[in-house]
Image (cartoon, rainbow, N blue to C red; front, side, top):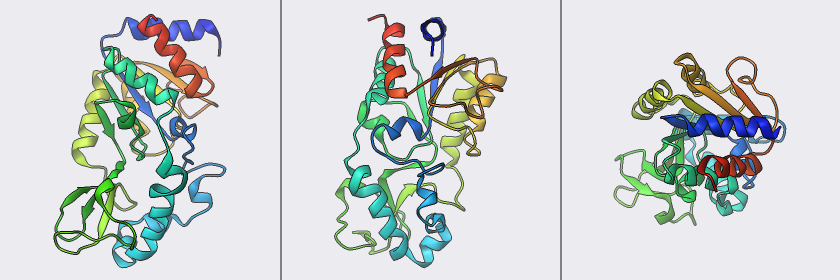
Length: 249
């Protein structure tokens, strides 16, 4: 990544009226959270069918064994926002970033202080009862015995994550599309651009005239077709530098 490219990206963002960010697993890797896809990804080590809604209904015990291991204990449970999350939160606080659309379910954008976050694939921060529909904060749910049960009716609780065979929540999908159409800069961070339908969002932004600033450790499906400016490297290094130039520290 050249200093010229970083300065060009910063100037583009400073002069924009409506900036959004679109983030993927790469931004959270630096917080110790493994991606789902790619070398070393979760799907190369675990059965993705355990994250199918129909399978979950039939065998919630098996699904929850993996859910708990991956999302509520170990590295994921201890994960904290890194410098990239914090940089986006500061840009929003300074009025330079309007919204974050994230494919991640780890809640790290919220923990970093970001407010307008659209969690396209849901979040592990809350759970919903499969029987009565009660939604609860995951931090308040005892998990000594799995699967966890609803305090109101005894039904099985499911994390509010979009499983296979589940649709993207309509209100989130509509809000994300509206942001893509409204923005004049879309900052893409840490994503391959291959997971549908989420991957369409930066492409839609570009079709509506937005400049796409891509930050990735390697070239992606966006780099040559969609991105206007490509900043190659780790988000935890590039985003703080970019935010500093944008904010004018």
